[in-house]
Image (cartoon, rainbow, N blue to C red; front, top):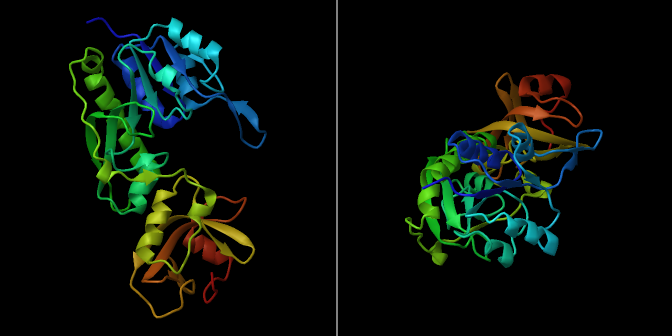
Length: 309
């Protein structure tokens, strides 16, 4: 069959992998939907998102509506007469009348093995839960939140010390590979989709900065997962006096008898803090407005041993 008419909807880096894979496969979208430019940097200048940058490089038609509930926007999308809409971390709700526009429907590239970890932050949720694997899924979109039937999934093993940033890139690549492998079969109606098992569903809410606050009463294992899950954003953090310190790298170490939150040691390997169960060795830290440094350099700046975090 000839290449399908594709509307691609995506905004951040996760979606770039899928759009790049489509272009590499010779399947150029007839339009790219992406969120409006947002203020960024110290100057808060309007800045295009990663998908927009790639679309501009390839001179793809761009649409950046603030909402898809506007009649004029829906008319523009309908006029494209798309066979399918590919959605990857777009960030806007697709109302039913938009879902109904493409002949073969809308397909979402989702960063988990559905039905586990529906929602906005599946990669972080998988790390926080201690999952051994996650993956990517191609899902037929319906009115629910990541509840539609799944065409295909591809598992991705989670490394024992892997950060969300590193895992994000591997899951994005897995989703992109799934997309180019199965897209034509989906459009042609040759690929069945399986209903999700609702009894196995779990939800990954959008991450808030408060979620990344380190509570030293928790087990060291869980705090270590937090450090990995919130790297690179928003960064796991704790208070040292009046300063909010971000921790970018940490490892669990043997238990101690000290009260949770007590800094029990500092050496070239890191700063060791007692936890509710076990201890955590902090290896990379960042003070407000400063660059991230090794714990050794951090300890040279501040006398932390014996302090209560």
